Length: 125
Image (cartoon, rainbow, N blue to C red; front, side, top):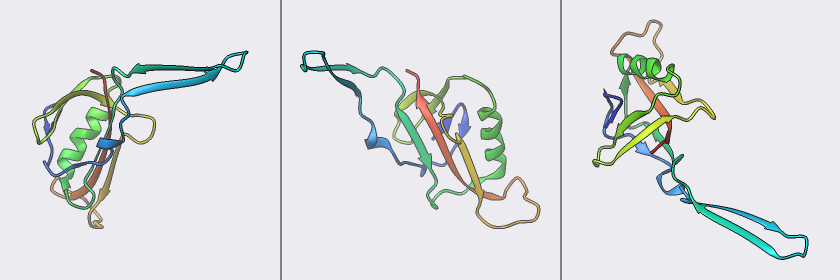
Protein backbone atom coordinates (compact mmCIF):
# COMPACT_ATOMS: atom_id res chain seq x y z
CA UNK A 1 0.00 0.00 0.00
CA UNK A 2 1.29 3.45 -0.85
CA UNK A 3 0.10 7.02 -0.22
CA UNK A 4 1.82 9.78 -2.24
CA UNK A 5 4.93 7.64 -2.53
CA UNK A 6 5.05 6.75 1.20
CA UNK A 7 5.13 2.99 1.68
CA UNK A 8 2.51 1.73 4.12
CA UNK A 9 1.86 -1.73 5.46
CA UNK A 10 -0.50 -3.74 3.25
CA UNK A 11 -2.53 -4.83 6.29
CA UNK A 12 -4.26 -1.49 6.90
CA UNK A 13 -8.04 -2.04 6.99
CA UNK A 14 -10.40 0.09 4.92
CA UNK A 15 -13.01 0.09 7.67
CA UNK A 16 -15.77 2.02 5.88
CA UNK A 17 -15.39 0.51 2.41
CA UNK A 18 -18.97 -0.72 2.23
CA UNK A 19 -20.58 2.31 3.91
CA UNK A 20 -20.39 4.34 0.70
CA UNK A 21 -23.64 5.29 -1.01
CA UNK A 22 -22.86 6.45 -4.57
CA UNK A 23 -26.30 8.06 -5.03
CA UNK A 24 -27.25 11.33 -3.31
CA UNK A 25 -30.95 11.89 -2.73
CA UNK A 26 -33.06 14.84 -1.58
CA UNK A 27 -36.71 14.54 -0.66
CA UNK A 28 -39.10 17.48 -0.42
CA UNK A 29 -42.80 18.11 -0.62
CA UNK A 30 -44.33 20.64 -2.97
CA UNK A 31 -46.94 23.17 -1.85
CA UNK A 32 -49.59 20.77 -3.15
CA UNK A 33 -48.23 17.96 -0.98
CA UNK A 34 -46.66 16.01 -3.87
CA UNK A 35 -43.45 14.15 -3.15
CA UNK A 36 -40.42 15.57 -4.97
CA UNK A 37 -37.40 13.25 -5.14
CA UNK A 38 -34.13 14.18 -6.79
CA UNK A 39 -31.27 11.74 -7.18
CA UNK A 40 -27.82 12.03 -8.66
CA UNK A 41 -24.58 10.08 -8.76
CA UNK A 42 -21.76 11.35 -6.56
CA UNK A 43 -18.70 11.99 -8.69
CA UNK A 44 -16.20 12.20 -5.84
CA UNK A 45 -15.93 12.47 -2.07
CA UNK A 46 -15.94 8.79 -1.15
CA UNK A 47 -14.59 8.33 2.37
CA UNK A 48 -11.60 6.04 2.81
CA UNK A 49 -10.72 5.41 6.46
CA UNK A 50 -7.62 3.24 6.81
CA UNK A 51 -6.92 1.89 10.29
CA UNK A 52 -4.25 -0.27 11.81
CA UNK A 53 -6.81 -1.83 14.23
CA UNK A 54 -3.99 -3.28 16.30
CA UNK A 55 -2.66 -5.30 13.36
CA UNK A 56 -0.30 -2.77 11.77
CA UNK A 57 2.61 -1.18 13.56
CA UNK A 58 3.95 1.88 11.76
CA UNK A 59 7.42 3.25 12.59
CA UNK A 60 7.66 6.85 13.81
CA UNK A 61 9.78 7.70 10.74
CA UNK A 62 6.76 6.92 8.51
CA UNK A 63 4.37 8.73 10.88
CA UNK A 64 6.55 11.85 10.49
CA UNK A 65 6.32 11.57 6.68
CA UNK A 66 2.54 11.27 6.90
CA UNK A 67 2.46 14.25 9.27
CA UNK A 68 4.39 16.40 6.77
CA UNK A 69 2.02 15.29 4.00
CA UNK A 70 -1.00 16.10 6.16
CA UNK A 71 0.28 19.64 6.74
CA UNK A 72 0.08 20.53 3.04
CA UNK A 73 -3.29 22.03 2.10
CA UNK A 74 -5.40 20.67 -0.78
CA UNK A 75 -2.78 18.43 -2.34
CA UNK A 76 -4.29 15.49 -4.28
CA UNK A 77 -2.36 12.30 -3.53
CA UNK A 78 -2.26 8.91 -5.20
CA UNK A 79 -3.42 6.05 -2.99
CA UNK A 80 -2.49 2.56 -4.14
CA UNK A 81 -4.21 -0.19 -2.17
CA UNK A 82 -2.70 -3.63 -1.62
CA UNK A 83 -5.18 -5.18 -4.07
CA UNK A 84 -4.07 -2.85 -6.87
CA UNK A 85 -6.96 -0.36 -6.77
CA UNK A 86 -5.88 3.26 -7.16
CA UNK A 87 -7.57 6.46 -6.03
CA UNK A 88 -6.72 10.14 -6.04
CA UNK A 89 -7.42 11.39 -2.53
CA UNK A 90 -7.12 14.35 -0.19
CA UNK A 91 -7.18 14.39 3.60
CA UNK A 92 -10.63 14.29 5.20
CA UNK A 93 -10.33 17.23 7.57
CA UNK A 94 -13.87 16.99 8.95
CA UNK A 95 -12.16 15.36 11.94
CA UNK A 96 -8.56 14.40 12.68
CA UNK A 97 -7.16 13.29 9.29
CA UNK A 98 -4.20 11.49 10.89
CA UNK A 99 -4.11 9.79 14.27
CA UNK A 100 -1.01 8.09 15.64
CA UNK A 101 -0.85 6.41 19.03
CA UNK A 102 2.34 4.86 20.42
CA UNK A 103 2.16 1.09 20.70
CA UNK A 104 4.17 1.20 23.92
CA UNK A 105 4.93 3.97 26.34
CA UNK A 106 8.41 5.36 25.76
CA UNK A 107 9.97 8.39 27.37
CA UNK A 108 11.89 9.20 24.20
CA UNK A 109 10.60 7.81 20.93
CA UNK A 110 13.01 7.08 18.10
CA UNK A 111 12.54 6.56 14.35
CA UNK A 112 11.82 2.85 14.89
CA UNK A 113 9.22 3.30 17.65
CA UNK A 114 5.93 1.66 16.65
CA UNK A 115 2.61 3.48 16.33
CA UNK A 116 -0.99 2.54 15.65
CA UNK A 117 -2.16 4.82 12.83
CA UNK A 118 -5.53 5.89 11.41
CA UNK A 119 -5.80 7.80 8.10
CA UNK A 120 -8.95 9.61 6.96
CA UNK A 121 -9.11 10.36 3.22
CA UNK A 122 -11.63 11.48 0.58
CA UNK A 123 -11.56 10.60 -3.11
CA UNK A 124 -11.31 13.51 -5.53
CA UNK A 125 -11.53 11.65 -8.85
